[in-house]
Length: 116
Image 1 (cartoon, rainbow, N blue to C red):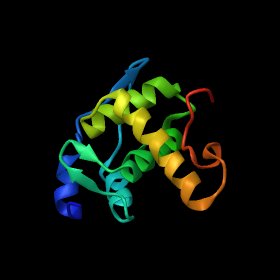
Image 2: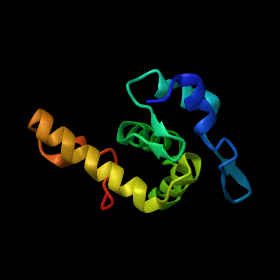
Image 3: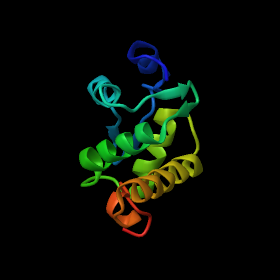
Image 4: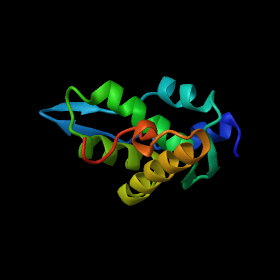
């Protein structure tokens, strides 16, 4: 995994969505808080599933009152320089892994299932 300093440069800090003239984006503190955990980057265009899940969780917490799930997932994909499909796959994989590892149902570990 890349170190925190390298990892900070991998985020697309220009990623933004605009709704009703209001711009929504992640900030440097969001990125730093993720990289303080075990989440990291395998390479510039390959974030770990932990990193993806962490960013989606932050996005949900920060923006859910103003943006729908699809828009937040799109912002996360832009921020991580990956596709929406890669985001969804990483979230599903992470939930499956945690379910296998910890024993609770996948839904317990899924950061933000599509149907919610």
